[in-house]
Length: 73
Image (cartoon, rainbow, N blue to C red):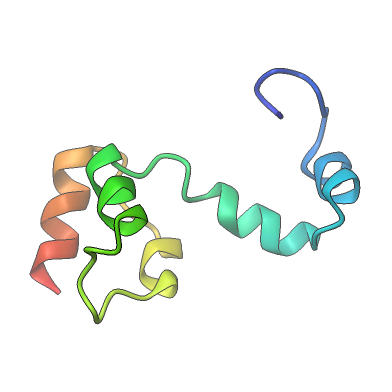
């Protein structure tokens, strides 16, 4: 919705969707995740120890490095 221009700011989107602006900002940081990671999580096949807090940390932008980072833990 931000990319399409439907909402100009995170604040506008959060208000329209009735969610906390801070939470939305954190969740938006997940958008550059490797598709394989997203697929694994959506299918419920992620490692049992994987926590959202791990994904919200600074992660590399390169998908192969993301996968390496998550498989090391």
